[in-house]
Length: 392
Ligand code: NAD
Ligand code: MG
Image (cartoon, rainbow, N blue to C red):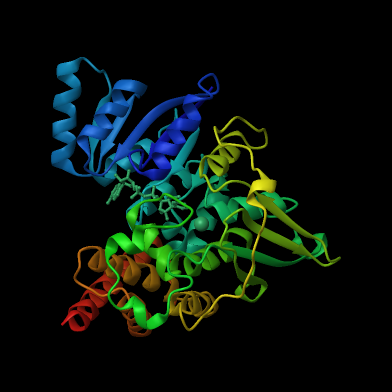
């Protein structure tokens, strides 16, 4: 029995994780569930799973949850705030931590899990983009296991000979990161000026939270994933190529020097990478339907259009620049996407806010986690200024 803390259990990845665990109840026990402020949803999950801990990062929501659970006789202990998240992520009785909080809020619990040597199932790419090497150092020094949940990175992990092996000797020449191109792949750039949050969130293949859905529409998601791949697999951005693949069936590929290209295929359903990372190196049932290649019938591939998707170009530039740029990019994007979702910023200005913030925050890379948090705060403040200037 492995004991699991699901950070971000009420979100899209969190719910898919619980679905996979439900199918494999003899292997996994839910030890902790966490959410930001959705009391009703976390209460329902606690009734079903009876975890030892539930954490709400919003303090008043935590008080409401505790009241609900105690009147119903559910013995789950409720913790509050960022410290509660860290406490469950590093708890000695926890084996696996699903890192599925969206955005920078997920950084500290993941670092705590890394330092305490847990198996980390990493969906929260923003944390890795922000903290970069410091995150990977914490994993190594803590003796943790880092398994990627992001479908592309999980696919690459499956196609690589072994994580952290010497790829030079093993002959890996390139990583081919696929992306669907999102809902606006074929739209004229001029027509993107007036898109609404709901249009941007209507992804053709994947059902996801709203922030990552907007990232997919701008292709900032793919830009962040280039940085994520460089960190996870210790490669240069020059050996990562983005290939647009509208069907989202090939989840990514690894090219070897002898001409072989290994790909991982499957229906676009996050329960596959979740099940893979939970059970690795075994395989368990995920509930995902088998891939029907005959009815899929065709797989298309095309080069990305960097003019239509400036966020993707920026992702490569930032990966190349390193230093303060990745954390600044992530912070600016979170601020800009939030402004777009709240109708304070036009869709096409997300890229401009990100670009201006990266330029304004250029500098040395953070040397400590406090530096990361400080850089993140400064970049968010600058991005908010750019949002105000560009929203008028
Ligand atoms: P979501 O918005 O559906 O869920 C986010 C979860 O985080 C919720 O449980 C929410 O309560 C919690 N949360 C939000 N703000 C918080 C805060 N300030 N403090 C603590 N908890 C907070 O998002 P999602 O689509 O499940 O994505 C989660 C992460 O996984 C993101 O980093 C995303 O990039 C990554 N990811 C998601 C998918 C997908 O298919 N959904 C695929 C690849 C990677
Ligand atoms: Mg992805």
